[in-house]
Length: 324
Ligand SMILES: NC(=O)C1=CN([C@@H]2O[C@H](COP(=O)(O)OP(=O)(O)OC[C@H]3O[C@@H](n4cnc5c(N)ncnc54)[C@H](O)[C@@H]3O)[C@@H](O)[C@H]2O)C=CC1
Ligand SMILES: O=C(O)C1=NCCCC1
Image (tube, rainbow, N blue to C red; front, side):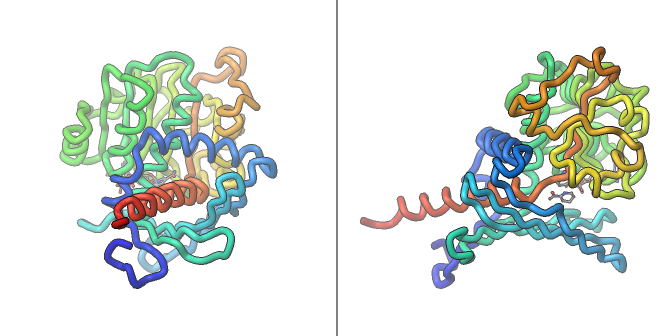
């Protein structure tokens, strides 16, 4: 059992997470999770809205995210810290995911949660983009140049072949590094980056509106991943009020999304309802909107399904390596 064979549980590092699971399969796992969440009791997901402990002295936050899925028989929790005022060399988001045996409650694994968070968030966004896009997209614009920018560039290319991927970041140097890594172009001005983009991914730590509706193309699909706090904004009211809004969880959105709460935008559906077909998308002209939006807050079930899949893969590999 790796290096910790005396422990009754295993530790799975971020590097191993990457080796054990691919983005494409995680996209399908997230699609199942999003659907189950929106099926309510029938979907068999139990997850309270995240509890956030504020660490005001250091401008930090600790999120507690437990969940159970009866359909995949997965039980566990994520502990995640997010410290928006970044310190050089310290990741703004750090996490662990614990995997428990649902039959006994026994701890089976502690998995690096940073890599899971990066991958599962982008995988959920890719599911949403697939469900919301009405035609093949040409231009992807990623606003932000941190770790989620990188994982989103990977995930969104799995089902769509963009002819152009643009990155905008507050710091031109960091945007350039990110663009080089993900084979994209840097845009130095945000309005230029957004011009004619078919898919816009917002992955910043902004706390004030950054993206304006006037800069977006009619019909754009906006995936908003940042601003996961009732006081924070990433999008202006023009974007919010002119969007057909979908969310990962209505309960979470009404508690945590500053963009939804402060703009008073109405939620059309949970993305799981769109994926399952329970809520078909109306045409934008029929609903009087200009944009389609997915507001992602991040759900515990995404971490627990990912952690469980990774744990099972890890154990299969261990077993196949045992001498017979
Ligand atoms: N919905 C979800 O499931 C999840 C959401 N998130 C959120 O996604 C966002 C991005 O996270 P990471 O990439 O992990 O963070 P990161 O720290 O790696 O990158 C943050 C990026 O935001 C930029 N930024 C910071 N303040 C800004 C401002 N005022 N205006 C414009 N850009 C600004 C930074 O320069 C950097 O490029 C954060 O808001 C984070 O809380 C993170 C994980 C899961
Ligand atoms: O789901 C998560 O994980 C997070 N969501 C919002 C910001 C912190 C991490």
